[in-house]
Amino acid sequence: MVDHKNKTIQKWQQQIWTRLLLWKDKLIQSGTEIAYGTLCAVALFPALEAAQQGDFSLLTLLMTDFGVNLIAHQIQAVKDAGEADAPRLLQSQAEENPEIRVELDRILQKLDVIELARGSMKEEERATFFEQLKENLPQGSTLRLGKRSVFVKGDLCYSIINTGDG
Image (cartoon, rainbow, N blue to C red; front, side, top):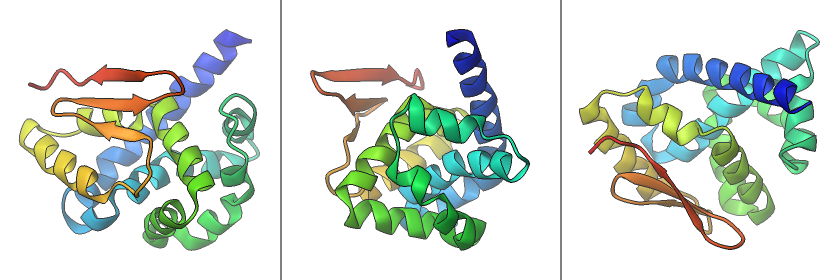
């Protein structure tokens, strides 16, 4: 069971990586005021696309293993928004609804989306990305960004994901 879950997460991360390569400019230049929403959209679209093809393993993982129920129930709204508007929709939902923000933070953490994004960038792009994300995290986000690491606030302490880029 754990092996199947790990394979599903790896499959999802590969799809996120592919989308990050295509959307990298949105994170660095054009969509910088919604960098957080863009990361969330990058993470959710593979689940949407898989479900459209009859594969519900990613959505099931969201709801059961990640405990993300609000987002799973709003997938249709994200799908209807499309790639162009989904980042803005997710950014505004995170800013307006603390429960959704917690779930989006959990998705970004569980799938290492921020680390995947940084890994898809050149060294000089990482600094721009870091600053844009830091400035545009929704208020109350449990994600904490350090100088060279991403700090994720948990129930008991902070865990550190070292990016190794400095």
